[in-house]
Length: 162
Image 1: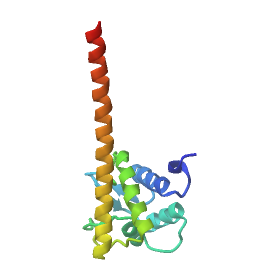
Image 2 (image 1 turned 90 degrees about the vertical axis):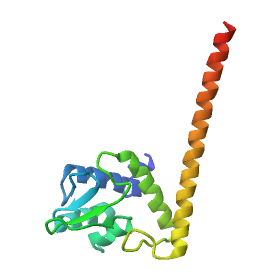
Image 3 (image 1 turned 90 degrees about the horizontal axis):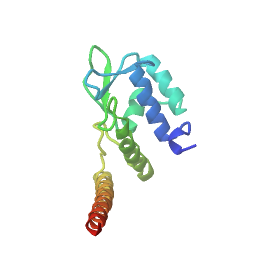
Image 4 (image 1 turned 180 degrees about the vertical axis):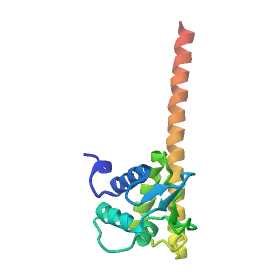
């Protein structure tokens, strides 16, 4: 069983959260644009979070803020939250969401009320993490490009020999 399918792993929780919100059940639904989560029934959503995270203490607001969600404006007395990596229909973005939050947890970085660290040192750590991820992705893209070039070169070489 991979880490993504283990109950209560961070990735499992986020993927489950994404799936439930997509169904519009358990007190939360996507906004029309798909970039925000609307809490439609606060009590029902709180029960869902308790089941999902195995934690009985803490409010929904604390849970979402701790995981990098930013509280937006309220719509018709309903809370609205957003996260750059939590978008309807784009499960591939959840990988980035998981990596960043896992890093924050491992480094003890506390997110402030606006979804950014309050401490300048934590902000620097997070910036370095983002830079590291960007460089890692760039390196992988270069390796992929290199293998494609090598393949094309070998194909051209074999055709010239014919």
